[in-house]
Image 1 (cartoon, protein in one colour):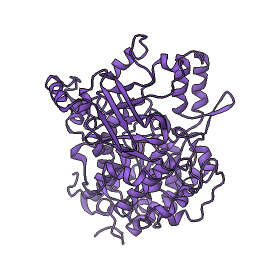
Image 2: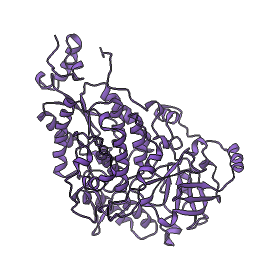
Image 3: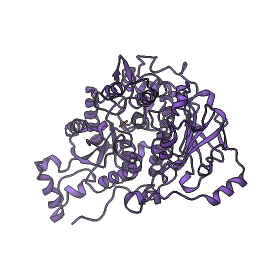
Image 4: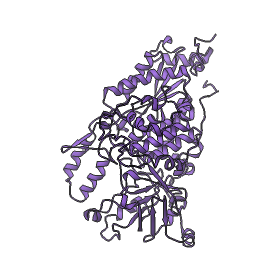
Length: 575
Ligand code: FES
């Protein structure tokens, strides 16, 4: 006889079993002090926790998880919290992006292999969001995201400072003597003064916004600061909602439709979000078998106005954004441009959810009639330097450099750049174009955030604030500049970027979406004959697997064998 469970729940295949298998599944859960009535027949909700002391942005997640549990219990469910690989952007070497796909595997298999009917994903620091969503997408259960929230605004010497964005500025000031070592060190604690992820519209905020725009969170959740009590309340409500989603069979594929992805691209443009969104959204779409390509980001996003005045594109920080009304205000402003045929985790469209939003500070969120910039999304360029595309964030660029011709100053690796950038004899001026090779998915490996190479000290001292920079790497969402990123194919596999030489003329024409090396095809062919890939010395382990299987940036840089879904069914018993 099967144990009680009137609904078709996945967890029934574990806790509802008779005989030896059922005994084992239940007995070892009881050892944690749970009486049978607490989990038998109840929807079992997994709480996927990325808490780790090596991921400081997610350091408050044990507390958040408790509020999610409270909600699950209240709604009649049974929570089981589980850890997955957690990626701390600021600490892990060589770059968190190398491990995004590995973390997504740990999420996918942890969900598939355990008796969950739904999952709550606790996300925060940059890669913890896409890795969790990618893993959950490949399984397909009802899924709700609770973003951990940004830090409070940094405060230093009487002004607000933003995570990342001001680090780049302080580092330049230190190099040029405008800031002392003591002030530099003092700024560390002033910048990161509470729990939470980066306070700018960097990648973590972009990812939280992406989840809300996709419909994966309860409305308004993405901007709430980590330490605000309303974060805990909505974590509690998310727990309740996860249980309801099981009863409604509201699986992730019903939320993550093509319309949802279109909305996420448009919303990202309006908030001035990170270029990293492209890689992560492409990878998530490919896990869902949703048709999405690099050109969609330009077609759908590049004409969207910039509404949110947050660093690095603007002036304010996430805390200000929340007090101004947060993402629902942006969604309401964009409502005419958004798809309304997708549903979010509460069963309504994001537009419906935002109908009553009010803008409390038009300095922080501009009405669509008076945007900060008329067209501000990410532009995709192509040309012989990037036949499969490269991207540039217009809102963070210098307008006068968007059409430009200049001579290449080439750095073969990031170490070469560090060694020579402040060499007084480096031939570089304000018209030059900095080119960095071997920082792509396979070439580093893992596409580090080094594309926004700092300018040479001698140019900063002359008052130069921006140069065109080109690489196959990424840029921190907190960074800024006229920076072309994600060049595909990358230099490590012999893309034309690998063939650029010092002094070559490069032609930038963003309005016409082109990026070209003014070198003949014949000459490039000759150079290719002599080109050799770098020996990275990875001959074992995950990095070897990654290098062998990672897709290029224009495909989302997922490993080829992870694209698509496995589903939630695991037929074989463990005993
Ligand atoms: Fe974690 Fe910026 S370092 S969000």
